[in-house]
Image 1 (cartoon, one colour):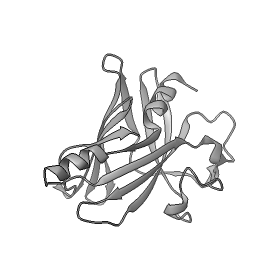
Image 2: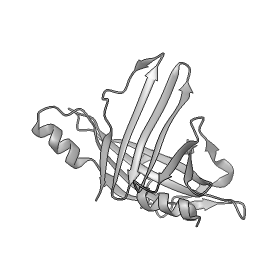
Image 3: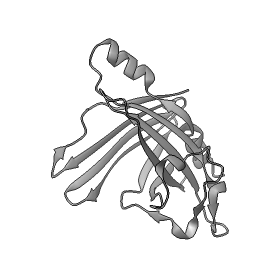
Length: 189
């Protein structure tokens, strides 16, 4: 595997959540972030009909969210294709999970989960360029793209060993829809 892709996957993959952040917010009686948990892993072995020599890696991120004041868990599987750009950058391409797949079945623990390369489509958002900073031992990204009529999605992240700081901001006609202004702080568990 390409060294920058290995470094990126080593940091991103695993089980992470923001339980510590939520507990601190609740103790201050002002929870603003959702509880969020990611179970992330390389899923190259699940891609069938992949052309020989096709570069990059595929990553499946199971995302689980519980919004403040709610008890229902929202399941959002995210599927990424990661390629190297030079020696210090990784490009994250957001892929469309095939519509015939149920979100609760698109999990790393599902031994029957398979993606057909011929059905895979990139989503219009991206690619987002993550830059490695040797001095700080982290990747950073600040990427904004349109995601629909009048809508934009901005992703600002810092990824380092054991923790991620993730700020996702959605705007519609310039009006912010995201209910918080600070990043979700994930810690590897």
